Image 1: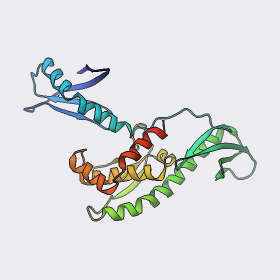
Image 2: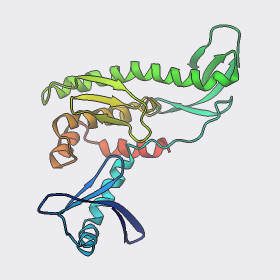
Image 3: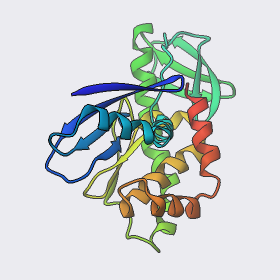
Length: 232
């Protein structure tokens, strides 16, 4: 069952789940879902009262998770278009060539050498993924080494295209990173990796989680904000 309440100028949409429990609990998921679990027979009026009371916390959590949601600008992959790599803007140059197909970046340009213009997107995305595989491991290595004083570290670091996440941590200790993160500055990439490392010890965003994240990256809020603004 879904319901909506107004809080100031904002609306909070939430899902109600009736479960066998003694008290009402509210969860905000990384997918931006608000789930309210309540005992059977709990009245809608009481649920709305509790959600309204927790509204500032819910809005804060939704805002926090928003930084982990890639926001995409539609691209046409033609010469003159701007594309990001490691936080820097480059002009795309699509070069028709009968020679080897591939991507290079030099100066202010990312050059895509292709026999067909229609292949430019495929080639560029493959290049981004290749660079992500290389750079993420390179960036993660010293962070994992530092983290070993708290935990043995992740069982693996893998890439996966995720429409609504920059990263995630599986119950088996794998860290999953979105290859599109390669467009962000190095410190933003570090922030996401550290965030997921902290989840190896603290699955939820509780006080202990934020204390550890702040210890490992004291200015994480700066890079969270940069990530939110840069890839809009």
